Length: 428
Image (cartoon, rainbow, N blue to C red; front, side):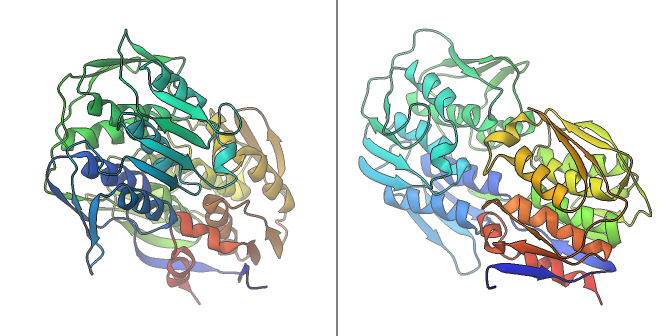
């Protein structure tokens, strides 16, 4: 079958991997550059389905954007006002494009329709919309309440006090609000209701906003104050660091089967998923974090862990697969956000891990995995149109276990060359 990737049993890996650019950083910089005053050159952006959706949306909004032959992108900022005031925008299943654009277009005084793939229309957006409604934004659901597609109409922004937003479903809602509010030119206080999940992703947002000249005042993780008369100013050139979530697969590959150096992230990474390396250390791996790379060596026996994964929700999926090879039962908790990602990841991971023979207990916000005495071979893994499921289950092959990945093209969302890069470190 063409839509399958049959991975042979592999005994060892070694070498260096240079990561593609971060999806989270690429899509944030694209939008910040488009809203800024000045011309921005993005160096090393990710080329993938999700970033393509953001680029196509910005082009539709008449942002002057050019991709150079070397992959860098030149963006002429709009000074906070998109030229096109009427557009229908399709964003696939790209949450990092859909959520921030929803907020930015709410303050853009135009008539916009935002839609996506069937799965995007199942992913909740109510918390962001509820926050925007507090600013008197004219935004309506076109189908089911609480979910895309959306219609946005011109409105007069009114601020009557702190904007309350839930933080316990997706950090992308807060990121969207933070990035868009400077377009109002007003001082706005955002107040978090409940616990804020995936805090490192908010740190990425605040860090990049500061690079574009807007310094948000953070009071704990409960209040964020965006100063009045804010405006984004291009930093000129901005470098996109390697994708730390994608790094997790190759760091795990090293722990399972050999010596690997992952280049593109390191000590000064602004991404929370770089902390995956620390989780690997807890499992017994030998890790060395350098300025611009991370090195890892094979471990004879991984140790099971019990870990709060709130800070590394995407990379935690890789830990779930490593649990197949660990001594004891591994419990990953505080991962409720898995339920509203590209698929219901807790349910999907549990289903596929059981196919390989693991005993799995799943809860509302946790998964517990006990490895089998012998992992089943030649299992077909369903991927649910979820790039991360395809990538993390490919690692099973590195323990001398042949495995088949169904619909391998789903990796195009963030890492189109993933399987080629994986094959490049395999030693025959």
